[in-house]
Image (tube, rainbow, N blue to C red):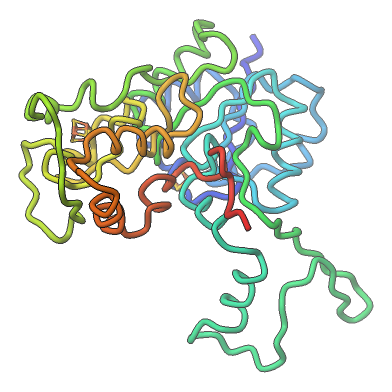
Amino acid sequence: MTKPKVAICWLGSCGGCDEAVVDINEVLLRVAEAVDIILWPVALDFKYDSIRGLKDGEIVLSVVNGHVRNSEQEEIANLLREKSQLVLAFGACACFGGTPGLANLTTKEDIFNWVYRDAPTVVNPNGNYPQVSTHVNGKELTLPEFYDHVYALNDIIDVDYYLPGCPPPPYLVMYAVSAVLENKLPPKGSTLAPQRALCDTCKRNKSKPDRLAIREIKRIHEVEADPETCFLAQGIICVGPATRDGCGEACMNINIPCRGCFGPVEGVVDSGAKFVSALASILDVQSEEEITRIVDQIVDPAGYLYRFSLPASILKKKRG
Ligand code: SF4
Ligand code: SF4
């Protein structure tokens, strides 16, 4: 019997999402028996040309991690879409743009100037910058085009399912794998993770007072956070009220507040805007001056509110 073909591929990725696939341990061996893995650049030596030679839709599932920021990543995303029945956006970068998406707060020119000219470790006496095409000894050398912005996968291709997290935890990876193998997938467009907010299951939730009211915002490294008490009740920003549950609370368990790698809760488009609204409702202030004083205590608001999701937010990038 022919086994279903599966591709696992990285675009703009740190490799952590591929690591997460390996983290399902011996289950991976059962998966490898049940399916024919025909592409997995981080682990196996396949060529893109073998994918180009497949019929459209011949791959049952492509698991794609990483964001899109250059023409090669866009080409591979389009190739996998063409050849696949289902595409799963795997990890925060593919789902929302991820932490690299914070680069949308700057420009391509500023990035190049820093990396190839201004960084103290750079030695570039001729002022060379990467070119899409260069001629050396009569031959043309090419590089992918670096785009102006970071994109989430669904900005480039149609995506069937989403599995967030940075990276997704093994139990959700296994859930996704069995949903595909057993043909028990939810409707197209679904996120393969719980639909509630992280606060709904957080062990610290019961420590919240009936009415949260904060007058100061502190950064996690400035205080010794109580490991049992809700971070927000301690005046420490935790975006759990606006973040989808499912991570397994890995950060909470080491006394670090949620930074939002699971993206917005079901039905919410912009988790940053949702958190601002939640925060506004718990500020204990009487005047505009006090609001300004507290808001000024939030150092790097974009880093708090859109750490994993700027390209998928309403803002998408720095405006103006
Ligand atoms: S989601 Fe996290 S682990 Fe996965 S590629 Fe992006 S940064 Fe790496
Ligand atoms: S705000 Fe953070 S610490 Fe408080 S209950 Fe929600 S997830 Fe837990």
